[in-house]
Length: 371
Length: 125
Image (tube, rainbow over all chains, first blue to last red; front, side, top):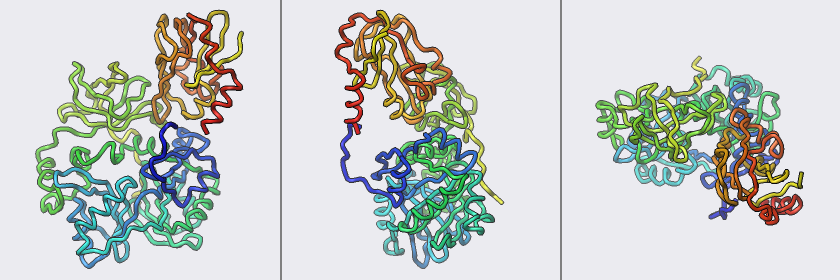
């Protein structure tokens, strides 16, 4: 409340709707976003796991990349297998730097005649500079400033969306499709960042409030904010850029090596390939792990992790309360020798050592629809 | 029992004899959102007005709770360790944090009454 707004915050297409619904708006990555609605974060989180919630993720960047050899070109900036993407399939991958660090984690969708990339809001401008710098000669790169992005997440999401878009029912996890919903041209992806089944819907800004109101009008659906999005993704073991991953962490250290296919790992051809390949073979010096604090006290980001003797072995990068778990949950990096499940650790919370253990990720089993 | 007084750090205190019961205000719990953990001081601890006395954690963040007066902690609300959500449900009642034996009751005069506190929070927007 004491921070003066340093710059004018941007608004998504749903800003007025959020305010109307009584959202608490906060600055996030240059946008004024809803952190929670009147029900509160725990209620929104639990509702998402049991029914369906609508999230505004329109602050995220959407970029199209077009050109004759677009998949080959994009593979020069990410370690993911883009050439192997079937039409309307999508992949989670990263923009890497020369030392194998992560500039951003992104989604790449193979649309009919181009690639559609979804990037983090805070990284959007830097990503565009990077992409243009690397690929401008080969590709036409467009930032879709006029597109909104909605996420409908939860076990009832498919039932709700199928009322207006029956074709969504048969879509598999990590596939996309172009479809009209109530007259609006949408690109619908069966994906999300909550660990639940659900959809992300890209559509024109001016059509977004109408679709949002339509979905919120369904009895299963509740509005949810960034607070619940954060607790859901933490329980699902998913990384938050700028916290769990950044330019100083590699995909291998972050346990995202599964996103790199054998062909890409062997052939390289992306920034930091040699370092990443070596880590895949030899194992990294530190790894991202789940951490379960033993008591009720949350261990938050930047909490020091020590071994039983008090020697520092790592740091928490995301931590808080997991409403579905019903207690504190966290993730962080520890030395690889200390990364085995069940390893006892101490968490330095406000100067006091509290017990915890290395735990399996995710904390809550995912329920993606694989057909 | 005396009237409730309020600090500009959003604590309340109500005096009964020389013991003040202290908690966080309804405005504070609403700002915090769902409370998931409360860390309370040891009984017998001497606190000075303005000292960090307890910690309240919401889903989003940890916040300090300051002593609104000086004195000795005589009791803490143990029920909050198992039911921290009581702070949201009844901040001014069952969600109290500590009881303090006041060293200097005149410190209460520096705190706001309900009308002043209400005007103070209205000004915070």
